[in-house]
Length: 359
Image 1 (cartoon, rainbow, N blue to C red):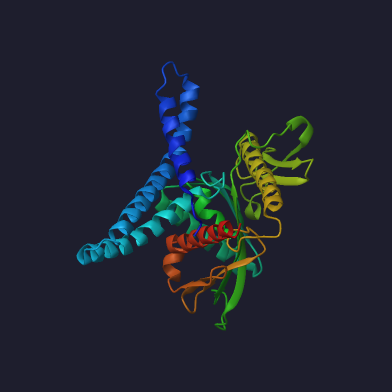
Image 2: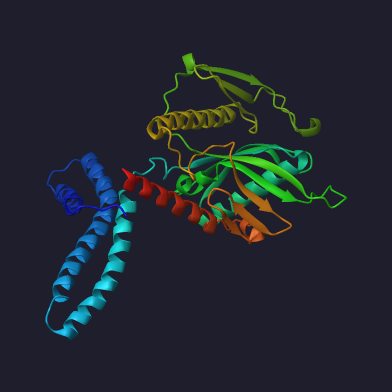
C-alpha cells in the first residue's frame, strides 16, 4: 500500500481550508466563486479521507503508548483495540490512496456507444442487437438516457451497426471497460442441426467531445457531401438529399449519417460523432505517450482484443481480462452488469495502486 506522508495529509486539509476561506471572502466575483466551489467540491471528499487517516494514526500512537503500561488489563485492552485500529487504518489509507489516483478527465462525460457485428453473419447481427439491448437496460438501472444516433438493421433482426449516445452521471467511468470484442457461443435459431456456433461483435465506448475539446474549421477541414437516403427493401426512400457524408480532410475520418429526414439534423449528428472520434484519437495518442510500454490489463481499450464470452449452453459469462466467470447469463443480458463492471473497476484501481507502489 502506498504510504501517504503526514505532510501530504496536512497539505490536503490545508488546501481545503484555504478554499473554504476564499469562498467566504467579501466582494467575490460570481465566476471566481463558481471556480472555487468546483475546486472545493473536488477536494472536500479527499480531505475527509485524509482527516480519517490522520485521526486513526493519532489513535494508534495513543494505543501503542497504552500497550506499554504496567497494568496488564490496560495493556490487553490497548492491544485488542490496536488490532481493530490497524484494520480500520489500512482501509482508510487505501480509500485515501484511491482518491489520490490520477483521475481520467473523461470519467464524468457522456459516452458514444458503437456496436458492430463481426464474424458470424446473421447470428453476429442478432448478437449485436442483444448487446445493445443489454446496455439499454443497464442504462435504465443507472438513470441514464440512451439516444439512438444511427442504426443499420440486418434482414433477420439485430444490427449490422448501431451507434448511440449515453448521457448521465459517470457514464464513461462505468462503460469504458466494455470496449473490445464480445464473443457469443450458442445454437442459432436458423441452425436445424443443433450445432453451437461462435459469433462476435465489436463494442467501442468513446467519451463524447464538447465543442471546446475539438476545434474544427468547417470551411478548411471538412468536405460535406449530401445525397438521398436509402431505405430497406426500396421502402422509405427519401426524395430529398437529406443524407450527409462528412470527411475530415486532415485525418481522412469519414462519418455518414442518414437516419433523420432532415439534412440539418443528420449534419448535426454526424458532426457530433466526428468530434467524439477526433477527441478519442487525441486521448489515445496522449495516453500512449504517457504509458510507454506499460499497458493496463483492464483499461487498454484495444478494440481488437477479445474481452468477454457469452456461453449460452453453459449459461455463463466469462471476462477474460480478469478471469471472472459468472453463471448468470440471462440476468446479465437483461442489463444486470453491476457485478462485472464493479470487478473491472476494482481490478483497474488495484493495478493503478500497484503501479504507484512501484514508483
